[in-house]
Amino acid sequence: MAHIVDQAAASEIRNTRVALGICLLAIAPQIFEFIWSIGTLVGWGSARSPTVLVTSHAAALLVGAPAALAGAFAGGTRPTISQDTLLALIYSYPLLAVAVLTTFMTIRSAQDYIGGIVLMALALFALWASNDLQGMNGFSFGAGTAPRMFGGLLVALAAGIALSGLLHDGPALAHYSWRGPLFVMTSILIFALAIRPLGLLISGLTSFLVAALGTHETRWRETIIVGVVLTLGCALLFPYVLGLPMPIVPRWLAQ
View 1 (cartoon, rainbow, N blue to C red):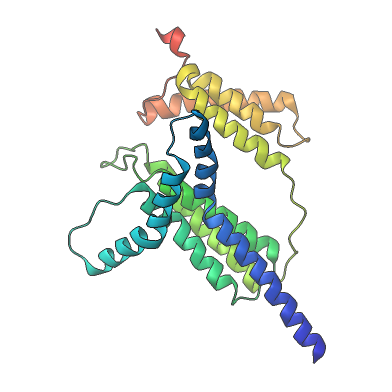
View 2 (view 1 turned 135 degrees about the horizontal axis):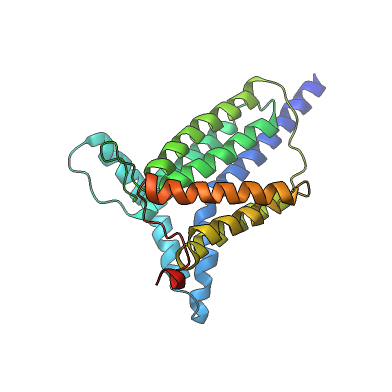
């Protein structure tokens, strides 16, 4: 009997830690933006000041998002919703709801459950980030069509992975390696910063090769060949097939 009680208490502690981790993940974009805004105190960057940022996000989480939900259920004229409120509605609130539910669940495979939640967070953030992009117009793809399509699909798949962590026994949370995520995120930042001045050919291939540094198993001859083929494919797909206004070559060369 004492063993069962101890086991239940340990499970409750683990669930509480997981729930707290999900809560932290739910406000991770706000925390990142707050850290970024600290640079305004020394005259660096053009972001909002930390005081304005904290006030705006707190108002969005505590007032703006509940008011928007109440207005949606009540019907009537749809009010203009700020990006901070949309972030709370699309990203933070779903993860906070998952965190609350986690405290009442039995996690049988921590690796599957937490991995599914992290994938869900990435998909929800992509849905928020693409909410102001143009969507479908008849059969014509807009800039926001693919992010929303893949984001919605990833939410469904991530929910299935998390559900399997509740229904089936599996491995505990394994040791986490930072090398892969570090180089993948670096490659995304490189692409975002280089796409306009350097064009798709250079920024696409460079970001692909940087992402390949995320594993020591990379075979560079095959990686370079695949990177060149994918970059050429993207250079044909996005500007010409989908009609997206993406520069192909560096700005100085195009001029």
